[in-house]
Length: 345
Image 1 (cartoon, rainbow, N blue to C red):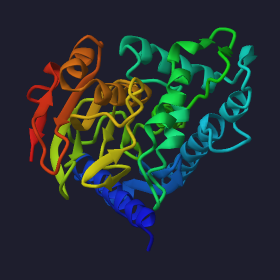
Image 2 (image 1 turned 180 degrees about the horizontal axis):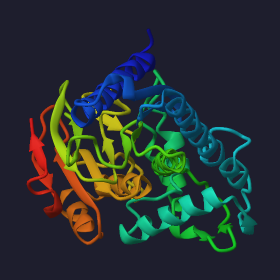
Image 3 (image 1 turned 180 degrees about the vertical axis):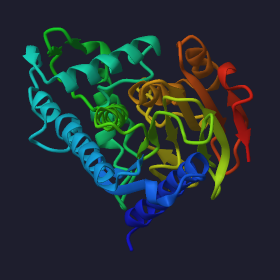
């Protein structure tokens, strides 16, 4: 088995364990006949949808509808398909003004730019040229030349993109390439949760590779119990207790390569062009997964001090942050709103 396939298999196994933990803790006192779950590969990861209903047919229909919605969001937001809206925008190398886009793309871009603004660009959807240099899924990976990184850095600038959600129009400066991979999964989770609710499901969980959205409250329990993966060991670092909303995790263990003893991962600092340092894992809790997704990346790039400060001034957001760079974790930091709601294992 190739290195990339082994890594994918390990990631899938870890994700399934996370889902199992959530379901076991949150739904353990409800009959298995009421619980319905399915898994599909979408948005580059394993996505699971779990619903709780005594009507098996309605549960299956709701799960299928949720997956259809996620697939629809992926088709619009991915840049890895030449037919997507984002790919067509990126093909306009001379820039564009007033191009009409779908409601989904407009909303995702608007949410992304809001987090870019509040994080001073730590989260940036114009990192596509940098991402293309860091081909971490390639078995022949080599660290990009500094000259190559410096050549594309001038085109990484979130302020080069504008969007108007009222008119659903966008503009971008020449040379700008958009990558929504750091936020689209969260938006898709939110939409899938909304679809479940619209179909009468009262309790459910949608997990897209660590971006998790909750519908309703768990039966026979006051809170959802969400496992946070240990960034350097098998098993879990701890459990977060949430009443509602969503969580998203960014970790340096998700996609990486080790060259000469140095770990190079996929979470890039837009100001340097290199992987961010000093943090191993960031889990953000927020009402919407789209916000949690973007904020998790922003906090990871900003680092412990500035990252915690960002969360503390963001209403409704909380974070569990693990510091370190090497083989052993450093400190586990928790925002003020999660004090007493994060239980280390």
